[in-house]
Structure formats: structure tokens, C-alpha cells
Amino acid sequence: MRAALQLHKKPPVRTEGLDAIKYLYPFLGSLISKTYVEIIKHTPQIWDFLYDNPDIAEVTRELRQMFSFMYTPRLKALLTQHRPDIFVCTHAVPSSLIAEQKRRGNCHLPLVAIVTDYDVHSYWAHSEVDCYIVANEQSRATLISRGIQENKIKICGIPVNPSFLKKISRKDARKRLGLDPQKPTVLVMGGGRGLGPIGEMMNKLGSLKPDLQVIVVAGTNRELEKDLLPHKRNRLVRVFGFTDQIPLLMDASDILVTKPGGLTSSEALVKGLPMLMINPIPGQEERNARYLAKHAGAQKVKNLKDLEDKVRNLLRHPDALSNLSKKMLKISKPRAAQDAAGEILRLLPAEAFHAHAHAD
Image (cartoon, rainbow, N blue to C red; front, side):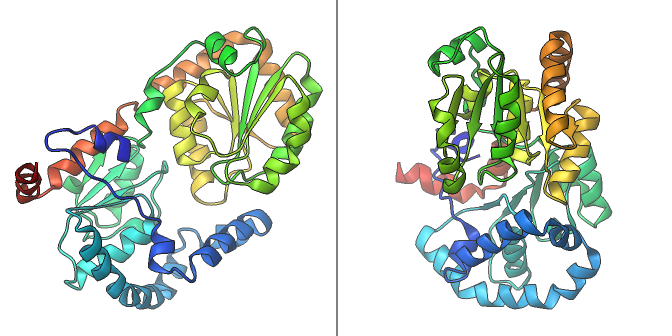
């Protein structure tokens, strides 16, 4: 999203990206993030119970308001330090906190909420949000049912970096990666955090070699990256940690095996890369999986044996792969980031443009 906003030249747009949890709660931020990951890894049923549960939302309302009150000094510091003209939130927590501050009269800046999944949970809905950027008509209808004015909701899609709009041939992409340009290639990812049974998936896909090449991305999961080191000795495997080469890796691949996170899924849609969805996080990713299976033909993987069978079957039927690719491209919104940037810039007060133009 930042890259799309920075394409605006007259006047130039300055963006500042903040990790809201770490900024708001510097002593609790790491603990909150680690707790979330541990819940997802070991007791996902707890997250399933908490996610979009109206009873939980009601019970925690006062607690969330207390956190918003605690946030007031941090908001004032942010406004003084960064002097923003608008807030853009891609997570429900900061959007909720800023909306509450607007309700209390502590902030008067426009607030844009970008929902990066294919459905919207109840924690997103706040009348103080000035504009919602959503993926589809379903999300729009959900927000309207929760009291959000229709004219505040814009269906732009889930924004992806403009670099995903550039495409090179599979053969050229594989050559750049040092892979055989003729061999089928599977990309394995577990989101930015490298979640899911990726090690087990690599072992299962190993049964399909030497007819298959595998690219695997560990993301920020250093432990997983270390566990994958033995695979680096295999000429048919490429192992990446956190990387900005995802567009190239997708161009090189025939199939993506991943959790159905909103951003990764949207990147795959733009690339027309057929998806096999495994281990969705309860809540948002399960809803993403249902949407993508229905509208894009993405296939759910029940277990590791199912993964092996599905990969083998798709690679044996190139026409089926081609049809899946066409379905994904049909519902993709490659200009989502640029369209969302346009909606954001329309909310900027006129004096903001005049001030920046004068400064230039």
C-alpha cells in the first residue's frame, strides 16, 4: 500500500509505517505477538472461539475502551512526532483504537480501514471510520449489516505491491533461481511467520522428486529456516527466509501450497498461480478458504497424503492447472493498491495538499 501511495508525485506523498501493537504497548507488544502465534500453533480452537464472537466482543468492550484510554498519550505523541494528515489501518486493533479516540474527540483526522481478508469480522465495524477498503461485495454487505454507511465502503480488492503486476516467463524465472527451466515447480509458504507443517510438507513432496522442484519460504521463522537447511543441499530445492523476491518465486512456480492468508492469496490471484490451501487459521483464513474455493477454484488440502495426491494429479493435468489459473485471474484485482490509494488521497483535506505544495 505504501508503494502505491508513493507513486503519487504531485505533491509527493510521505508515508510512515508503524507496528501498532509495538508502538502502543512497547512492553507488551512482543508478548502479545508471541501469545498469538503460540495459540495458533498449539490451541487454534481457542482462536476459533474468540474470532468474531459477538458475546466475546460484548464482554471485552470495557477492556478495549480501557486500552483506548491508555492509548491517548501515545496518540498525542504520534500526532506531534509524525504530524500525519490521515490514518490508514490494515489491522482491526489500531483501527478500533483510533476510531474510539475520534469518538472521544481526541482526534479529527480521516481514518481509512483496509480489510486484508475476504470477509469482515465484527471488530472492524466503527461508525467513526471514514472509508473502508474491502475485497468484495460479500464484505461490503457484512459491514452494511453492522451499521456502516454504504457510501463509506469501497470495493477495491486487497492491495498488493505493484511489483506483482510485472510478470516474467516461468522458464526465465526458474533460470534466475538456478532451477531447471523445464521441471514442474511447487512453491511452499506459510505466510510471513512461516506457520504450518512446512517441514512435513517438504518431506511429503520429496516423494515426487526427481520429477518436481520445490521452492520453500520460511519467512521470519528462523527455527524453520534452520530445520530446512538439509534441503539446501538438494539441487531441486530452493530455501528462502524472509525475502522480497516473492513475485519472482511465484512466476517460477506451477502451484502454490500455503495457508490462505489474505495478502498471499491476493498476490497469487494477481499472478494467476493455482493454490492448494492447507492448515487455515480458524476464523479469517477459514473464511478466506471458503471464498477462494468457491470463486477461484483454489483447492483445500485435508492432510499431507492429500497434498501429495493433489500435487501429482494437477501436474499430470496441465489443462486443469490452466483452468485454475484463468479462474484466479478472473477474480483478481491487480490495481487494488492504486485504486485504494486514490480513495485515500480523496479523503486528504485540501490544506494538506496546499501545505506540501508550498513546502516544495
